[in-house]
Each structure stands twice: as C-alpha cells, then as structure tokens.
Length: 277
Image (cartoon, rainbow, N blue to C red; front, side, top):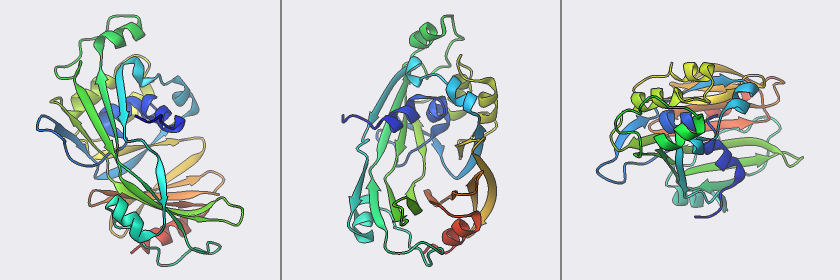
C-alpha cells in the first residue's frame, strides 16, 4: 500500500470522523464485495453536526480501539478534460451553465479513485487504551471488520487570478458501509460509548437516523454557519464561513453526492448548484 497523505490518515483515524467513520460512516460507495458482507449504511442525505475546537482536540486516535487498514488512497490525478474525467471515474461530470461574476476561463479536472477503510474493533486493545474493563462488545463487533468504501469522485476547479480556488464543483458516489453481521445502530451506540469520545459529541451523533441513511457532516462551529436549502428538489446543506468569504452547498441525489464551493457568497454557490446540467 502506498503511503497515505497525512490529512487523510488523520481524518480516518481520529474520531472527528473516527468512531463516526466506523459506525456512522464518513465516506464510501459501491456494493459488498463478498456474500457475507451486510450493507448497514447507505447515504440518502447529509446533515451538519457542529463540533468545537475542544471536541476535535479531545478525540482519541481510532487505532487505540482496533486495527485500521486503508487501501486505494492514491490521491487525485489531473486529467485532460471532462470526457477523460467521466471515463476514469464512471460518473457524469456536472456542467456549469453560468459562471459566477469574477470566475472566468476553463476548469482543470481531477479524478480520485475508490478508497476503502476497514476497521476491526479489538476489545482487548480498547480495554488496554482505556485502562479499565469495558462493557462487553455486542455480538458481531469484536474481531469482526466494518468496511467503508469511498469514491470514485471527480472535481472541476477554476482558479482565481491569485492562484487560489475560485470555484470547485465536485461529485462522488455516496457513502456506504458494510459489516459482517452487526447492525448499524448497535455498532454506532457501542462505539460512541467508549472512553475518549466526548459525551456531547456522542449525544449529537446518536440523534441521526438509526437506519443509517443520514451522513453527518462535521462542521467547526466557531468557523462555519450552516443552513438548509432546496437544490432542484433535493435537500441541501449550505456552509458559509463566518467572515462570508467562502461558501459551499452539498446534497445527495440518486446515490451520488454533489458539492459546489468557492470564494463566493451563499447566493452565488446556490445559483451554480441549481444551474448544473
């Protein structure tokens, strides 16, 4: 396996999306690779969850609870055009009908492949990390893998005159997760009860649907505000930096997550999103 980018490794091993990434799932796509894999999570919508800086600092490393294996994390590759991006990713590349004021030129195209994260909970390892005896793990969790599949995805990027991103339009197969038998809510509730997971974070995550259809979107509450809007009949989450210099909108449709973001205001990213072809 190739060495992983530090940012990705941090994301999948620290429960900012850690335990969340295991039981609630942060990324994925595709179908079970073997007959004994049970689908336990299929994203139908996203919803924000506000986390403080203190929450993020307090979260422990997921590897303290078991084994983490990541495959396919080879980063993104630049491709020549939309046709090449569609061929490599297998996705329909969204077309922007009208660029916002101040965004000009043609975009660059990037494609990322599928990434799989397999977490195997170890009661012995978790007990050692906690320094005390833990409640018995539910049947089907200890020593049994949970698999998350991410991607493939495609992105279009328009740069500003300063070289900074002015507009990004991205699309990826929506998150799914599979287990070897344990149900979503059972795994979620037990993993969120482990020492090191802040009680307020656990309480927020437990409010999401037990059927595993809502993907929590971690948001730094001191930096970003959120709201809900409709994009062509789909419920979307809008994120805006508190200084209003950057905005983004994310939604799910037909098993695909689409996002529009940039150095734009809320109305501009919504206009782009609603005008995608």
